[in-house]
Amino acid sequence: MPSTLTKTVFPYRYDLVGSLLRPARLHQARADFAAHKIDRAALTQVADEEIKKIVDQQVALGFKDVTDGEFRRSWWHLDFYAGLKGTEFFTPTDGWAFSGGESRAGGVRINAPLAYNPDHPFFAGFKYLQSIVPEGITAKQTIPSPSVFFPSEPAHIINDYYDDVQDFYDALIPTYQHTLQHFYDLGCRYLQLDDTAWGMWASFAHNAHEKVLQPEWAVQAKEAVRVINAIVADKPKDLTITMHICRGNYKSQWAGAGAYDPVADYLAQLNIDGFFLEYDDERSGGFEPLAKISANGRHQRIVLGLVTSKRPALEDESGLRARIKKANEFVPLADLCLSTQCGFASTEEGNALSAADQWAKLALVAKTAQDTWSDAE
Image 1 (cartoon, helix red, strand yellow):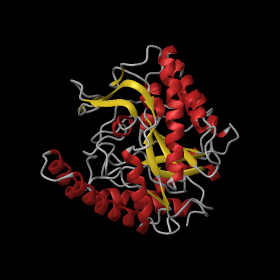
Image 2: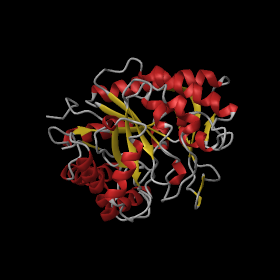
Image 3: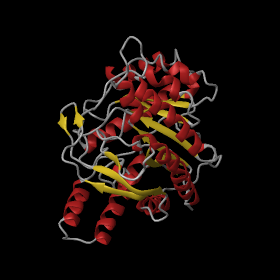
Image 4: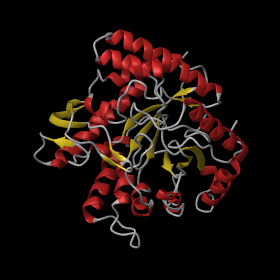
């Protein structure tokens, strides 16, 4: 029987963000498909087999929820947006600026009324994942957040249809509501919104001393709160929705730097169940802004992304526990959890570390949590 969310509370004390390094066999199959050497069915079979392997590895490490590693995607976000009605993928002339150079180019255009697609390929992917998880393990689905889809020329999200962008924002709400409901009907009980907008808005803060957003970004942040809260307002009560926030992750590079202070007040207004927050280096600032989320009375779990997915060196458990203790000064320990700071392959290229490094880091996350929280089995 497919597993469902029951008494286990998510995010779990040790949890994982989502994406995992693609194995060489899958890379080759994707290349062969692009070159018309194999058909879609053959590519799907390879992906199915490789996903089964990484699900088994996640379970073996003790994770209570597992993902498909995002193995069927090229991009963490564009594949989802391009699968909606009213959109199309396109290749712009340039990529995005990252710390080590420019990324591969990609973008999405809105060229018709935006709407939910009942035949979105992500649904078939989730059905397969749900079919292979063992009893007692929850299949976690990740999709990009609506705020990342706000039209932006630099982000290559181009609006060629809506004369009034407010109409686009409003269209996002039923599009996501129907999408979430479809995942729920397929058995999904744990869904994560991946969101780089908050991290980048924080990076563009007015200045480091005032710790406030520039007016144009403040308008966007306010709208994001409205849209996200409207989307989750009528969600099923047993559907856990979390948000992962980072500042870019492409081949071990980052795109933004800045503490959470400028966006903390907005994050505290989101009616979701938990946050996965990037905290693997100084780019993310201190834990002080977490107090604003903790003070909202919702007891949202805050998953500290203390273990980097960008570099192979393995962190020290004592150092991780010291940082958890520091975060505990601002958030009750009961509301804290642990994960890596991001996934290991936000795009199919993956980060600059090995699969062995990846699994060692996930094992460290599990062990550290088990040694920190009494309810982490």
